[in-house]
Length: 207
Image (tube, rainbow, N blue to C red; front, top):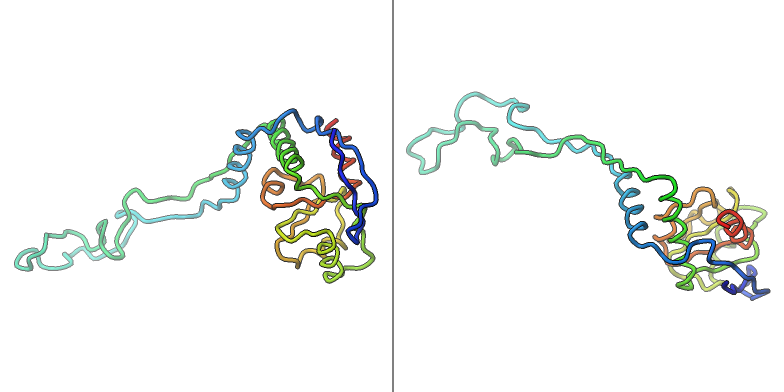
């Protein structure tokens, strides 16, 4: 059980809540998180790279220069491997880099990522972040009041379009609803700003 302070938008501590971190697991599973990160980054690759072999190139059939008397080695094709603008030997071809993990493994990796951030003290719990209208300047004041200066992930329980429009132009700030979290999105930033409602939802979901 961990005691976490809850702040308001002005950075003032208003209460403390108890969070049962055992719902996220007993320990941080680093190998599983690494596997999830490799899967995520592999799935981001387009795999559209392509090079041409000698048979795929069109070049003149004659020799690029006379074979004797130049002091150079003989050369049979202008588009041979190694020539400027020539073919590539064993070069990359379009391929699919996609990887997959079992659903339970992905879920366990996400839980480990959240547990690691929590135990490192990188969680900042705020009472609410609801805004009446999209205002980036107002959102920046809230982040400053909460002493968040490094990269940060904002976690809400549900999608909040007004809040998203307020923080999307802030540098080093990303936002994700609880249902769209990934291991990569949690581990990438330094700090995690989470609403009290979302934290309670995590406790209920993984209990």
